[in-house]
Length: 207
Image (cartoon, one colour):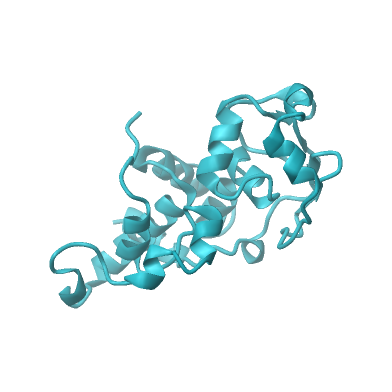
């Protein structure tokens, strides 16, 4: 499957928002978005007035890029959400938020979603005691997410044990001492801090 391999800071500039694709670097003074917040390209600072379609498209692209999804993956979550009872846009975001790579990131195990996707893909993460190497795996309420026992002696995870947990969503818990977390409940829209107008994405796909 094709994936974006270019400079990720350019994506933040294009969307006009910090997408926190580089973890801690995005919080520091070296963040490219802070230095040059205009869209990339020769005419980035003088783009024309946005149309209704372009605004909807930018909301979709911003959400895709925040979670690191390709178009086919993203659209499949929309299709699943349309078959569920409730508000389609909110259900779509909740499904994406339940991805294992996102849960690993939200628990503070990794500093970015790209890093958490790598941890999952390399077999470092277990769900209910079983190794899961599929980043798109959807967690359920009550699932226990942990670092594989044979990987816990690696320097990366040893350092994690001494760190304090901060900004943990209320639907998740994580104990650095045991490198174990739990999905206390399924997320709600209010628990998702991604700044996006999901109804615009639904309008775009509904055309």
